[in-house]
Picture 1 (cartoon, one colour):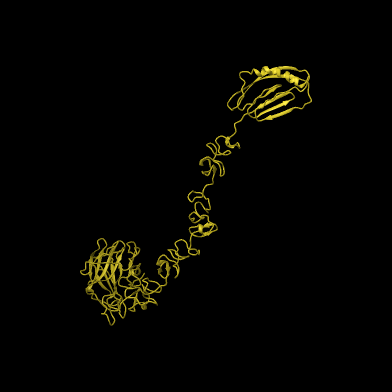
Picture 2 (tube, one colour):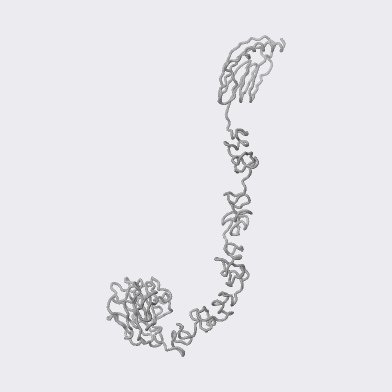
Length: 531
């Protein structure tokens, strides 16, 4: 029989089956649908052929129909096999003549005249399948489900891009910005350095000094400004000079104020040489435009270093003074302050000093005393002299002692104020207190004034400063009992141990309490002071 006749006969045999499909036959096309496949299975037994087995594998719907391979008569056995396939299910059909349809991953194997079909369906991750699908704007990125696309990826909106910038359908790079919290563009550190952003602070990355606020870039890091880094930075007015921390600048350097210049003159933002008429104390001047080797001598009351700096020819304690008997300073040919010599009156009461005070004793204050010393070179008449004790509670006098009954105090002689029974060395003058106990108050603060008529001769304020003491002396009134610097609080008497306040060296008077007074562990009423 010819192959054509065989094929025509076979077609007539299967025509009824093809024209009358079972009601449940459908093609499976989705993951959630159910595919029912009904196949009339006809098994034909034929003699073996010499054709080798054939295997076919397809990715799409496959229909496989076996054909007879010989012209010999055949014996046919027909059976019907129904199979139902759902998602992730494998269906295997063994048939001679098979009309089989699958949607995905279908494998058909033919061995001899038999055909075997396998079908497997899976749901891959859309954002990792290597394809642009769903609402992705590029392969596996963009859209509402997948991650934003990298630079160069396709996009429809800014949200499709990791840079948040979609330009003409393409994800653009993040634009350089000095406020975006990122190191980008030509910044040397985050939002600083480079050509466009502000200079970086200390310890941030840099390429050169221009990247740094300090203008100094060392080992690719901005470092703090110093006065020897050969760069004008920080608050300097010129390179390594000027400002509040560096040395003053030299003439010709830039300046912002006179303080920036060694000359003390800043003219049109340039340090200028010192002159004797620039209204600035500079150069070798001892005061403004006077003193020193180049300028005229200074007038009275102005600063000086030597007598040559003064018009008067006298520089006392750093001030130019007038040679006179009323300037409060021992100068010229005076033998005392404003006294003695050929021009002034003989010295009298000046340099009579309060020399030692013991105002607090252990247990009971029954051995208090105040010692005076004539530190001048001549006798002093004590007429008109008074010792006034002043309370720090109200700044008023609580006791006044007239010294005139003691007569005259000789040079180097002592006078002691104490209770009547207090024993003093021979040759020492004495004025008695009005009682035996608690005659001198214990401070915080209290004070003593030595007065001659209406002049305050000497004073002491202890355990604090008294600057508004009312002596109660007509014509004198309120005075300060602080000479120079107030006596330190650690220099005070004690009721726990024996001590007194003394001038050291004995009788020294520089008119500065903190310098002149000290504590002594050995009180010496009527004798020279010792530590």
